[in-house]
Length: 396
Ligand SMILES: *Cc1c(COP(=O)(O)O)cnc(C)c1O
Image 1: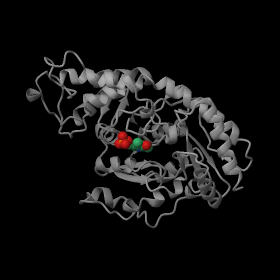
Image 2 (image 1 turned 45 degrees about the vertical axis):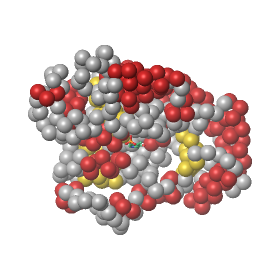
Image 3 (image 1 turned 135 degrees about the vertical axis):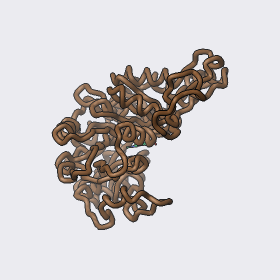
């Protein structure tokens, strides 16, 4: 999956172009930068790829989510509904915006369950944040309908799904704002980086100010620019944007390699009758970073994961035992081990997650994902598929 596996001369050339001027900052220095604007160029590419009207490149995906929420006016006293299966960054960024994360359930799409969202809505709910996990879409049309009916914001954590779509609509562009990550392990990488997309000019302008200390970016003189709102510093550098530009140019190739390798693996594993694949709301829109499936029991899932690893299959995840992607092991979050004081607005509304049980356990405890390799040749893919089928077959 990770795009760094395809680093070549193009990344170096892009970075050299920045180093030739030495202007690593994305704003200002017009006289010295020789018209090189890597972050702006990458934003234009993101708009082209996604069809979004506006894109803002940021330091990372976590910063993108925080900035999106702030730009939409979500903060203290507001609740944001999120799934229990996601990277910890989802609740981190909600809390960084000052809002309260409310954890609902997932369903067999591995994404936020619309039914459970309905159960979590309170008068304080402001936004729903589905996470398009492992590169494929949530039940996004049902979630959108709920948000419209209840007058809630829809903010998509599409950090794992840049390039994926739902019925032709790029993920991240369906809600009020969408966020992508270009961190080192994502399919398209800036080393560290993220982006927020929106079709609202106002939301974009507010995000643009928020991520750069409130700068309104109306002048060429940063010292003289106005500051209507205060903000933070979530800027990306030109070096990271340059790297991302080289990567985004390879994205279509990444997707077609992954889709073909996934097809080979899935075809082989579908011969195993006790194995049930993740429900895909739109299989054609999957960016094919993972193949995910359910084993009949938790015990068999754990055994299958061990057997796959033993057989030498790389990138195998049994998420139930993972410390970072499922709430079961988020002890720091559940026990409220925050490093500094957390606003009472956030904590007062937050359920006691040490006491809550999740129906999602029944799905995640049986779920395994295998990372689809970008570097697999067609022959490798067939070999890995056979190895994986044997390894799983051995425990059934
Ligand atoms: C990677 C990721 C993020 C955060 O992105 P960073 O760029 O690493 O900050 C957020 N949400 C999900 C689901 C992710 O996978």
